[in-house]
Length: 256
Image 1 (tube, one colour):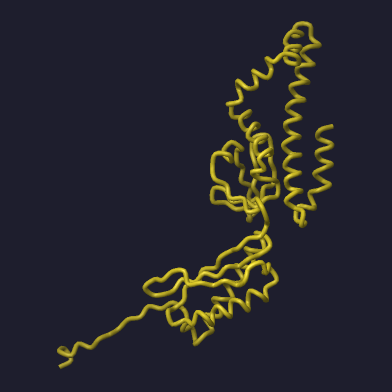
Image 2 (tube, rainbow, N blue to C red; image 1 turned 180 degrees about the horizontal axis):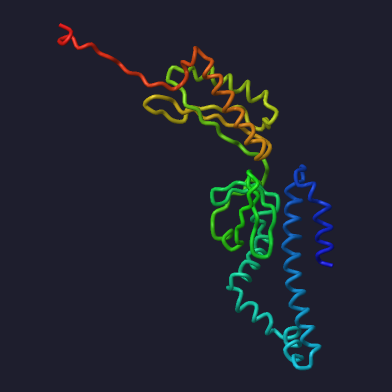
């Protein structure tokens, strides 16, 4: 019954994850997933207790599992064990809403979507369709970037290196034109381009690309990088591209 009703809820709402009400649906699916496993675990304990109570030899043991506080003390005493520790971590994740099914997350240098939360581990589907298996206890102990925690909107940066002779104002206007014409631009923030660093040979320029979600932000900032580089190449036959200058001085004495 627990499996049937949880699968019914999952199939009913899973297609709505990408909708405007997606965060609420992801929280619901996460709570259903964790509650399903906890209830199945409790049902297993009750089933074992009922089964043992029907056997005369183990009647005392079965009744104790069902009626006494011994079962609870037993569970608490071994909760530090890896398996039960991960189960308790799963309950904590569901209650605190640390991460939900369908969230965009970055963990241990990998980016992807939370695909599944089981008794003991969480599955992250990476952008290249790999599956990263993370024990739930580790998820509580190490930093996690949740890009969908409060909202889907993201800002992806594009970094360019341009020669000192580059007209930054002209480049900024071109960037604003390209960004406003792109279909993945969210319009939440105005086009923003700044010179953020200087080296001996070039300027480092950062352009911010706001988008509605992580996928759109990735596509947007890749296109903006490509188009801005193409523009730098086309201006004055590539005069805006980074270059190294050498000054040759004639040795007058040797020339004589």
